[in-house]
Length: 238
Ligand code: ATP
Image (cartoon, rainbow, N blue to C red; front, side, top):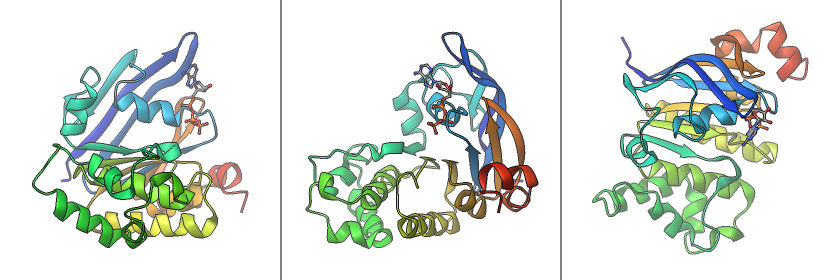
C-alpha cells in the first residue's frame, strides 16, 4: 500500500470573519500527482500556504508522513522534504539563473549540489542556455521553469506547485506540463493547484474541486474530466 505523504483533516482557516477553508480533508499519497482545481478565490492558495503555517489553521490537522506539521517552522517543513514552486515565480530577479538554482539547495552547500544542478540543466535545457543571465531577463515560461527547478534542488519528497500555468502562452503551458509529466514518471509526488483544469486533470491520478473553501468533488483525473459539473464550470462547457 502506498504511504500517505500529506493529509488535511477537517482543516479550517479564517481571515478575520471570512472562513477561507471549511472542514477541508484531502490526501496525497507517495508517487501520486494530485491536483486541486477551483475558481478564483475558492481558497486554493490559502490551502497551499497553510502547509507552511501561513496562515495558521484554526482547526483540524495537517499531517506530513503521519506527523502534525501545523505548528512546525518553515525550516522544519522544507528540510523534511516539502518544496514549493510558488505562483508569480518569486525568483531572485537580480541573480543569475545559476545563482537562483543554487539558492534552492538544502542543506546549503550540500555535496549533491553540482550533481543536482546538472540534473536540472538536463531537465530544463533552456535554463542551461541562460545560466549566466539575470533571472529578470527570462520570459515568463522560463521564470516558471526556474522556480520549479529551484524547488527541485532541495530534493523534495513532495513538490507543491501553485498555478504553474498562470499567465503563460498555451505552447509554454504545454512544455511545463510535459516537464511535470516527466517528473511524475521519475516517481516524484506532486500536489498541484491550478485554474487550468484541463491540463491539471490530464496529468493527475486524482483531483479535488474546491468551491467557496470546501471540497465539492473528488475523483480520478479521468472521472473529473468527464464530470458534467466540472466540464461546465472549469472546462469551458466543452
Ligand atoms: P486565486 O486563484 O485568485 O489565488 P484562490 O482559490 O487561491 O484564488 P485564495 O487566495 O486562497 O483563493 O482566497 C480564498 C478567500 O480568502 C477569498 O475570499 C479571498 O478574498 C480571501 N483571502 C485570501 N487572502 C486573504 C487575506 N490575506 N486576508 C483576507 N482575506 C483573504
